[in-house]
Amino acid sequence: MKQGKTNFNRETHRLGTIALYAACDLVAIFLSMLIAEATASAAHTVTFGFSFLWWYLLNAGVVLFSFAVLGVYRIIPRSAGILDGLKLYLALIVVTCVNVTFAALTDYATLGACFVFCLVLVNFFILIRFAARTVLAVRYMIVRHADNWVRAMVVGAGSAGTGLIREMQSTDKIRYLPVCIVDDDETKAGMTVGDVKVQGTTADIPALVRKNRVQEILIAMPSVPKKEIKRIFEICEATDCKVKILPGIYQFVSGDATVSSLREVEISDLLGREQVRVNLEEITEYLKGQTVLVTGGGGSIGSELCRQIARSEPKKLIVVDIYENNAYDIEQELKRHFPALDLAALIASVRDAGRMEEIFKEYRPDIVFNAAAH
Image 1 (cartoon, rainbow, N blue to C red):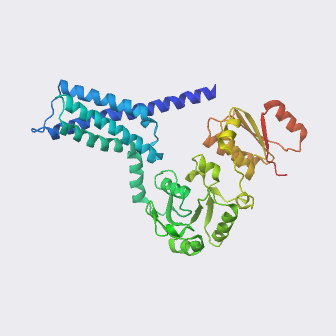
Image 2 (image 1 turned 30 degrees about the vertical axis):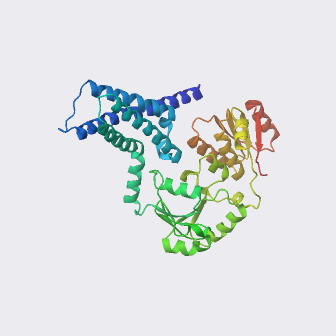
Image 3 (image 1 turned 120 degrees about the vertical axis):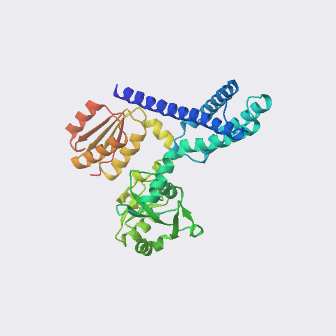
């Protein structure tokens, strides 16, 4: 029942967001037509007649239809990429072609007015969809030198590192100021990501920490071998900085390589074992809709298992740990990040056969992951 209500609320919110964008687009079309008519008219006046109405209805229909077909209304502006920009660009080409044809075949609008209309409309559409990102970027430029911002060094100028920096510069929730980047690819030396410069290699970390007054070092290299991560961590330990790391390739592939997914470096990050290559889609489907139990769920390996299982939409997740603090920490984290998850956090020892039998009888798990270290 709770899950159904949550899904209903999500769908309502999604439809509400689409309706808001559609309403803004309709207003943008109207304003663009006003500007185009006033610009193209010799008297710089607008006549609200039959021709204006037909022109508006045509553009409203074309824009809403093309945006819906191309999925423009499903784009999340804060995470929009090149492919999303191409969708918007293609929709605007359609609008331009329709307007040129409309001007050529009728007397309702001039060719000049149609071109001005399309040009103004492009700017309105960009403003509507990227206003929030623009405001956050401007805010970042203004307040980034405040004392309560954490000065951070990013290790890795690849996709994860650049994504991390761009999120730092567009979020209003976490106050990180990226001051420099290091990368062992010397071809990237001197290049910038969001105005943050690649100032050296990992060997230069201690010197660059002093030079840039770095407070935290963020390792953003999810696909690098653990042996290399260990080497970099040992260099970072020579500084007084706090060191954090992106969890791993699973989060990177699933699109969760964000500031909020940074965590402390754990011993499992430094072990010599290489990561096993797995089929993430098959695992997700395997866990979806299942009741899953994780023993030792509050430990370093067990807690990471719980995070990944939670992303796979299980029917229920049961976290079992012998330590109450560990169980509480992972329970609160999962509740924050996965509010719709049916979660049970239990205190028990896997060596207590009677207690484990009670748990199995009550919850009847379909899948069990044993991560209890002792």
